[in-house]
Amino acid sequence: MRRVAEPAYTRMPVDERRRQLLELGTELFARHSFAELSMARIAREAGISKALLYHYFPGKQDLFVATLQEAAEEVRRRTEPDPGLPPAEALAGSLDAFLAWVDQNELAYRKLIESAASVPEVGALIAEVRDSTSARILEGLDAPPAPKVRAAARAWLWFVDGAILDWLDHRDLEREELCVFLLGSLAGALAAAGAGELLRQ
Image (tube, rainbow, N blue to C red; front, top):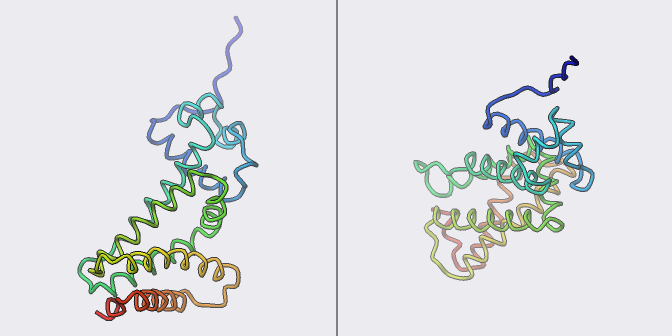
């Protein structure tokens, strides 16, 4: 009787397999465009069957969005403000932690920003992150709930992404210089909104 060949992949716990697939997805989506990758190729890279990959993620977009959500959660953890510091110092620490993450994950960050316009789920995720981040900034600074102040904080996050992309393109600023520049730009935006005293606390 002919023996059936053993599968090329090994059985492992569900959580561990999912974690490995998310790590691989993060790496692949950082190196390739969304259109370049197929579920078949991702399965080959993972050393598993396509059917098993579909068991964990119904489609390529689901895997892509899951990797972004994982990255967003890591950024949220890293940038959690230190409640023991004055508001301005806590914000500076959070911003520096974010810039450190970008420095370590340049390709992933670039792909995230590039995909925002072409993949609706990515645009929605970025909008959600910006909303929660601007709310966290204003809460930490004990800012008044004025429309101009809210707009200043949210618009500043768009400015941050633009400045970071310029920094990654040219690398002619130290990370610390960029951090100081970005904090100054937030102070200017808040001043224009009538709340310039918030970052001087």
